[in-house]
Amino acid sequence: MERKREHWGNKLGFILAAAGSAVGLGNIWKFPYITGENGGAAFIFIYLICILVIGLPVLIAEILLGRNSQRGPISTFKHLAKKHRNLWVTVGGLFFITGLVILSYYNVIAGWSMGYIVESIAGKISSFQSSADAGVHFNSLVSNPGWIISWQLLFVVLGGFVVYFGVRNGIEKIAKFLMPIFFIILLFLVLWGVSLEGADKGLTFLLKPDWSTVSFKTVLMALGHAFFTLSVGMGVLLTYGSYLKKDENIFFSGIMIALLDTFIALLAGLAIFTSVFAMGFDPAGGPGLVFNVLPAVFSQMPGGNVFSTLFFILLSIAALTSTISILEMLVSTLMDEFKMKRHSSVVLLSGSIFILGIPSALSFGEFGSFRIFGLNWFDMMDYLSANVLLPLGGMLVAIFIGWYISKQEIIGELFHGVRDTQFNRKTSNVWYFLVKFIAPVLILLVFLSAIGVL
Ligand code: TRP
Image (tube, rainbow, N blue to C red; front, side):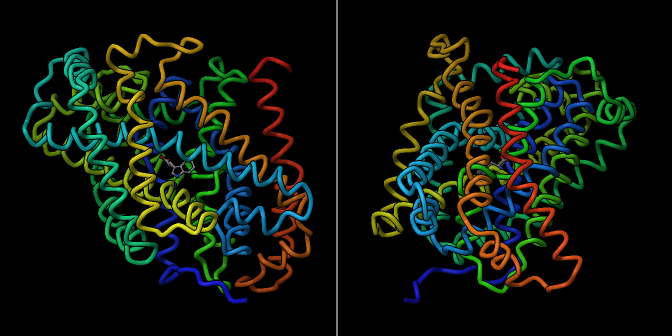
């Protein structure tokens, strides 16, 4: 029976939508600050290896699974698992929960970012003397429940609005419109950062490794971030893959997506660290780096509010094209599994995500004193999803492809849209080996060492 499923209008639409998913707060808000906290270049080096050896192979695996089944995550496992079906359906459920967890706190930071566009335009964040001043302003905003929850709500509604219109008319259209704007703003900020006097200190920080700060925890952070930044490990790219037609070259698309994502993270790091160092600030600013340190940096420059407005527009675009991908995964799961309509799924999920996100939104005020293992609710959600649930999800996808589907079937799927040459055969064998053996073992090792077993 031919199943009705929406498809991308064209290949560029898919690549931009998937790159839009990958490029998000992870690249611009998180990558710079965890790099700053984990010693700069050494961390970047480990992160790049994680992307190449684990992230990219699993990314390709996810897209392949989705395209093969033409279904959302839970239905894909139901449809393709020949053994241990219930177990795999549970894994699909885990993806759903991971999506809810990530979106709940992701929308909060995305909301700050939009709020900061308005602050910049109003000229309220361009006259700080120090990052401590900027920090005071930041804290007064994020500890104000009215401010933070209104922006969070607005962002949830915005994401819901796009997904409401579906894959081709919502997600693909917005990606094609926003991604080019995103690139232009980013290039502009990089050129300006690099042209500052003292920018070379930022470059040194990004290029010269300090291995003394590296531990197993650093490797876990790098691995977790590789998954987070590529949007891998919870069925989002699987869902995007399910809207692909059979004749697209997944290998090529996967490499493009990973390259764009990595390149953009490095460019964002370049723009941010050149300016942070040029103005003499501390790179280890933590989650507030772009909100406390950057406004202080912008305050030191002529035309600072223009740059800060542009920067927060950049951040908000990045966040929007990512949240819609996670929401789409959740929506497609409800549509496939419970035969719900797109519109009612969007409304139900957006409402739930908003409510689930409130504890995260309040973590920067009084509720912040509520701690689990020393972390506030927001940090707990972030840590749990990026460093536990996503690597686990990625490992399960790799195991599923390597051990639950025949090699013949999966390589067959890969070769729809790929020319059957010797070189391509060899590359696909390397890919298969990485997914089947290397990725699961490495992820397991990193887990065990991070919790202190090894
Ligand atoms: N990759 C996005 C970022 O870097 C976040 C994201 C979007 C994501 N979709 C995802 C993370 C799916 C994990 C899984 O900000």
